[in-house]
Structure formats: structure tokens, C-alpha cells
Image (tube, rainbow, N blue to C red):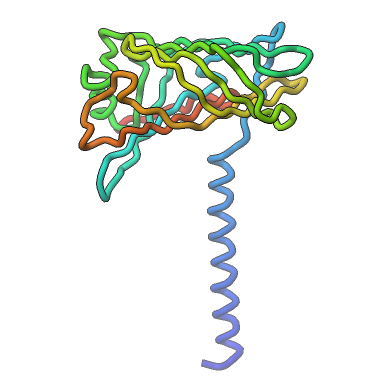
Length: 212
């Protein structure tokens, strides 16, 4: 192969690699799109699936964790913002447990069964703040503490969150982990990881989930 041909091949490979990297970055950016501020009325933000997401991920124990993404598609709540400081004052959320859904129909049914959420016996899950502390107010960082109730088991939890307030409205972003057994979700301790990864976003609509 002549040197000029070799250079063309190398250049082509470099361009292809750059294009693939750019494509991957574009996909990642699309998946992690910034939340859109939700308008406030008299310092209150109404939380619904049209503007917020409540997501959790469970994983299996062993060499193949197979993370399972789950959503609640019916809920309502309120996030209250203090007008002068633009800091969160309180939050509450009522979730309809039967609205739990995953991309896998069989898994959705199992999670709704008495083994997990037992949605017929316990159709509601709730959260209500008891305390909100600023950890870095300038950066919009807060520690939220409140009572989470699932299957009639009430547990005080604390988690970090970022709240941004502008003239356009408010956004909230939080990622944290919960120990499911502390909320009455004890099925399969030898098969399912104890900690569940939670993601709460105000400013991002709940996605439409297509079940297999």
C-alpha cells in the first residue's frame, strides 16, 4: 500500500471515530437534558407527571445485576418556595401505587403484587417534608428530610437535592438511595440488592413507557 493510500485510510478511520464519538455524546446529552423550569403560582409549584419524574432502579445480586428502571405515572404534590430567598420551604407528594410501571410487563405485575408494593392493599404512597436545610444556598443545594410512607410503613429519610428558582419557575433534582427493607419491601434478600436508586426531578415529564 502506498504511503498516500495509507494516510487516506488512517484519516478516514479518524473521521469515523470522531463522528461516532460525537454521536455518542449527542445521545448522552439528549438523555441528560436539563430540566425545564415549572411555573409557580403564589410560591407554589404543582407537581404532576406532566412536569415531574419519580423513578427508581432496582438491581439483582450476582454477576448480572440487570438494573430495572421503574416509574410512577400518577401522582400529585406541591413544592413551596419562599419568595424572598427563593429557597424551598416544604414539599409533599401523593403517589398512586398501582401506577407503577416498567418496560417489562411481567416485572410490573410482580412489583405491584404482595411480594413488593401490594398495590391493592396499599394503593397510596406518600412523602411530606419535616425539615429543609441549606447546605450551599448560593448553589441551590439543600438537605431535605421528611416522612416517606409505603405499605403503611412510615420512615424518616434525608437526601440531597438541588433547587433552582428563576422568573420562569423552579426545578428540583435529586438522586439518592433507599434501603427497601426499611419500608416493608423485603422480598428476595438473596436475589435483589437492598439499596434502591431513586431519582426525583421537577422539570422533567414522566416518560411514556412501552411495555414488552
